[in-house]
Length: 173
Image (cartoon, rainbow, N blue to C red):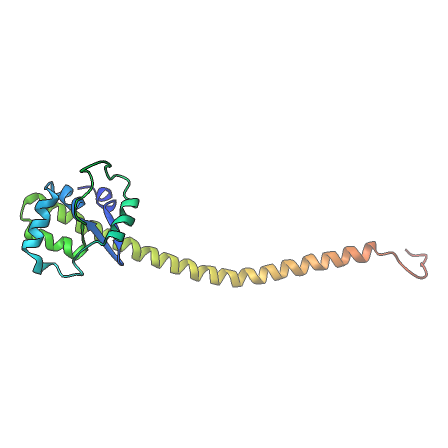
């Protein structure tokens, strides 16, 4: 299973990275109805931080982001989708006991790990860049002050030379 395909099916809702039931059903090559029935039969395995049903408002926001949804009668889900967190997806592998489900879950878990690692690396990189900015801004502040001093000095020298002299002129100059 290609990681990019999975990444495009991961959304953020309520501060969780989640996957929707119909996307998971598509990856597992099963019907959404069958996936939901299996979850309902094993509901004790899915506490609120593993799986939750989207509210209508959350679903409307997500629908506006998911441009691949089909339009027309019967093309939209009749019921609000279930959202599975990473732990919920891992729990699905225990109730969907097929080779396809196992292989897809392995790919999904690797993708979640990849996303988490990317976020950590991004945070580290942003922190390092911030530190470099602070360090170099101090150094460049000194350079800027020196340049400004030289510019001001040059302006004063030019003013001195172009200033009309008052008083006696010596024969030397």
